[in-house]
Image (cartoon, rainbow, N blue to C red; front, side, top):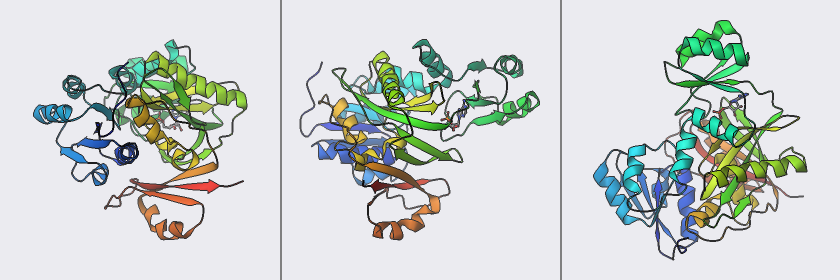
Length: 356
Ligand code: AMP
């Protein structure tokens, strides 16, 4: 194992959105500085990071200069082109590693990996054309969901199929992108578990949170989630199993469907996760600090929850509520500094603390 990163070391973060911003704040609290690599102009993380490289992911010279300037590399989103990683890995360690990215970038690879680990997933099948879809529908049945294998997020790139006659419309909606068909899981609610794995293999998990989505976008996360103690333990064991299998270093988010007889794994994200934002006001060490500790080779912190919290995303016009929220007690605001409000755009979030 390499030695822990020393004070003043530079953490390179690929992606300059709100996750990169909150990672940068956490890194600076631990005495590190951050360098952001982001193609878009004026990224939210740029307000708080020490340095920003504005360049595209195919700009080899910029990637090399960035790699040369940092001590460790991490990222805030999973769709980083493989070619960019090929270049970067020559310069500094990348955490979480390539295998975690490769597995999570493609829903078919991801679901196959989860199933091979012995975890429960929705029934699924590889879809390449109308014929394979017909065969999969005969096997899996309806309702089911056709999802693009790559680049799906916040419910995008998905089409629900309620009867076999809806198959061709669903296929058209995905415009020929490689896809998987998933059987519809009849869950009672959705939860996620945010866990960290250190460079030494230690695991720490936060209390699972219960997630509510609207129009495919996360609306709220509430802790504690409605789960039995056995389900909580199960959720943590699932996350630990995934992290160990990938020799993972950093924080990961695992989304689960709760059904009466099992927790069904929907997907995992190899990064800090929106449903873990409650930890900023519910734990001594939040998911962002935990991630920085892990990738810096530091011991993991204590992620015990000390209060009940509901995290609510501030999306688009929700920003109009900020003056009122700023006046209310037990409400911690986290705004991302995005100057332009757009419908569906995550502008910030608020953690409502519920003291007992
Ligand atoms: P995903 O992009 O896979 O996270 O899916 C977005 C949302 O769609 C999930 O949070 C669920 O609410 C719903 N969903 C996805 N897959 C399934 C499934 N197999 N069965 C039921 N609901 C699903």
